[in-house]
Length: 134
Image (tube, rainbow, N blue to C red):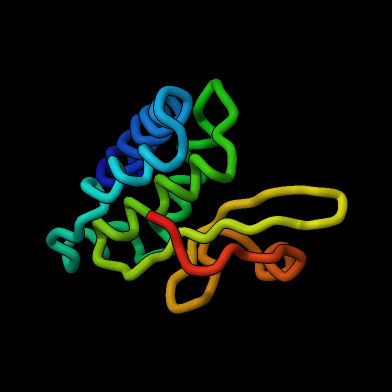
C-alpha cells in the first residue's frame, strides 16, 4: 500500500468516526448541512489520479470502515463516500431508499445515476426517496 493510499484510508477512518458522532449528536438533517461544507470540490485532477478514480475513493472508504473497531453503517459510509467523491471532483449524489415489505432502509452514492458503493441488484429492491441528499 502506498503512502498516499494509507493517508487516504486514515482520513476516511477519521471522517467515518466524526460522521458517526455528528449523526448521534445532531441527527441526519444537521449532519448533511455540516457535510456540505466539507464536500466542496477542490483540486480535482491531482486527487483523482492519486486515488484511482471514483472506485478508488469508494475502496478507501470501505477499507477504512473494515478497519474501524465499530461498525460503520451504510449511512455513515455513504455520507463519507459522498464527501470524498465531491472533494475529488465527482458529481456524486447521496441517495436514500426503503424496502417497503420486510422494512429495511439503505443509503448509497450515485454518479450519473449509477450506484458506486453498492451493487445494482440491491438498489433495485428499494424504493428511493425522490431527489438526492447532501
